[in-house]
Length: 247
Length: 220
Image (cartoon, rainbow over the protein chains, first blue to last red):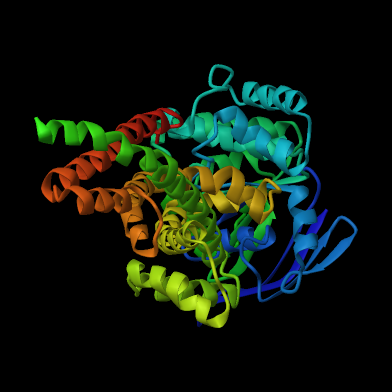
């Protein structure tokens, strides 16, 4: 469904992505693991053009896109088929939960307000926020805000959702409620690319795991194979250390 | 007794040009200033080539020169190159351009206070730049800028007295004329000051009320 080839990205002299390739098939839930500064977030941001890659080609459905030169219209078309969930939620603080979910429909897609609200309410119900339609983000907990963020991502009926460390800004006791929602999406067959530090989530929900280090993918395999038959010693150690910390 | 009847006689003579001239002058100039200030701030915020430099230049010149001299340049200076204006429109022109430069900086600061992540989220929701500005950034920035802008409005009410210098028949001008007839400078100028104080007090109350309303909605 989506394939990217040869993505490179530099910030000043620092090369953050060193020419990596990635293929995402429909229904894939891919966990992206790796130490801080390995380029996981940058990869995700480049794929949604929040960051402009220096080089790279994207094959999205039948489109071929030069990731460095893509024009506004091309980017807009790609964004219409994708959604993004941020580490820091980035909800619109002047809008209610429901308005956060519907604004993409009513403003960008000119959908009728009642129809959009119907969709928005359904999505907020899905993420367990039926009683929070009219709450402002400041009135919600971090976990609730992130669930609004997920409902907002779903509103545009995307082909793929990118999650950028969706639980890293949350208190430990709130992580579970967000992961549960993401797992439900996985069960529904949603295609997702999830940057995460939650080993158990990667183990239990994803069907493929990618390990990044210093701007490169150094290990990529099916989830079971990744955790149980990991050949790369560096990756094995990383997994061991993180799992130890979790205990 | 003579003083009291002087105050009573002159009160409406001063107040009426206040209502007929000072208030419209302030309201029109300030509204235009908001439009100029918002556009000037947006041009810089969006980092539009050339226009951004032009905006910086405009702000630099206007903030760096006295308001009174700007009034003189427009009203007494421009006729020598064939641009003749009536006092009232000339005053509106100068006040709005002057306040526009100051409020542009206030508004730019407020725009930058809105977290960048919300702009990115807006793009991810399929909105374009102007839609993000209109629905997300400007409403939040307005809340941040409001107290400073309200201050600027109150300052402008008082600054309109400078328009007397270019023969606008506003409150100060009218009071000067009464003083010239009666020689009661102290009483009349205190009376005028009191009327300005009344105007400012109403605006201050209004500001407090609006700030309460604003913070009630979507508090953060």
